Image (cartoon, rainbow, N blue to C red; front, top):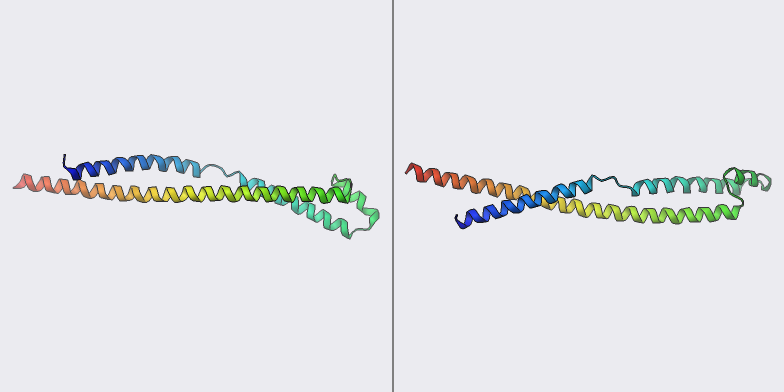
Length: 142
């Protein structure tokens, strides 16, 4: 086997390995992203607690305790503490989501590089096989 044929076969073998890697990365890319759910849920809770906090500040003192009790909070300080805790949880969820998106972007970039390599290897293999066919055909006709 000629050196050019060996090189072509080696590149095509690498393309097969790259294809298997692409399949594995595609599976990871299609996995459900759980970070978004936590961010959306935390945002809803913080929004509701912000609304309750704003509403309680605008109410007369006599009505405040009833509104707080309906929302399961014993005092304005407990509401403020709960709101601070939820904001911290939201900030943590947003950081985790950003990390998840960054990992997904890195996998996508690698997947794109593997796809480009596979296309290049397939084109090189096709050209090499055509050249081998043409050379063999020219030798047999002469």
